[in-house]
Length: 207
Length: 207
Image (cartoon, rainbow over all chains, first blue to last red; front, side):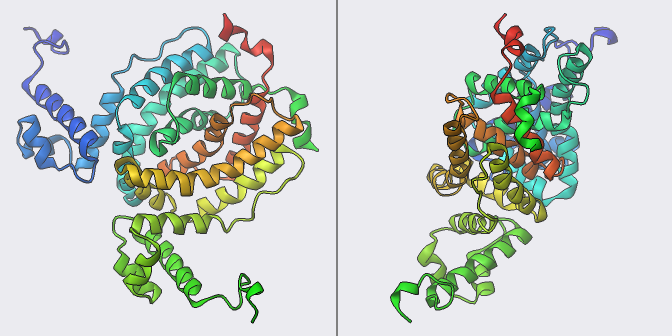
């Protein structure tokens, strides 16, 4: 097998297979037990690898949990350029919301957030390697919408991203209402309609 | 002292003072250590009460942490009827956001969420006694806005509440951006402007 097809799925190096086994075993244990009760030992046993193999790639179980969840959520089909910001955002958020609603991923996120709010080093890593990568996908869609003239050039992109992702995380973590297509579409529609206000609607704010 | 003024702050029964001491000590310890590392023993010592006194009111440290945070956040001035939904929402959310940004409350919320996502009984209690009480304040404002004719009668109130609270919780927990007045006002404005869309804006959604 020549070097130029080493990225193909067949012929993947043994280390990559071990990595996949670790990530897969982690997700199952994390969903079942949560972050606090999941140990590197248990992951090693379930994945059929040594602890040393795990520590070669991940210095803590939290970084492993973060990467495992990132990889799990990255299995949804990527957002595509449909030509419309509304449809673009749906192709980004609906498959994720559908996946997120299917299993108790909130258990992993909550465990990671405990570490985020108490460990500044992990917080930096989490935001750079997990949160920011996911936000960037929404940011690209909004920037494209600005170039297309669909939303104003001065759209506060970072706040809009919080308004798109925040409600989904809110339901995911608090569990007070379902994450379904009606919810996600309504969030997208309200945000997009809200970015282009009718000036008359603002009259009471200015008064 | 007559019975009809027992609700006044002076002359409060001793048990109420003990309760306040427990709640106050809890908040300090929880902000410093997080939920997992805070023990009922440590709270008892800091509050100068017995563990039995704490367990008289709270069966677990999580319910204590939940009530302590609820009480802490309830110290902001209550939302008032200003005559405008935009200003009503600002009086509800801005003081809370300002308070929430001041100390690491995300540490307490994250610890409680770990319990919410793993303990269905606590989840019910948390949603009924913490989340729902706070959402109700926003719900009242939105229902009043419907009666005033400021927002449509078929406004999806529960989703709108997630769009108002969700982005704030998102920043509170993930810490990727500040919770300031610019942010909160922008969230409120976008949501309110988004509830009353220009039908032309929806053209691409219908096509």
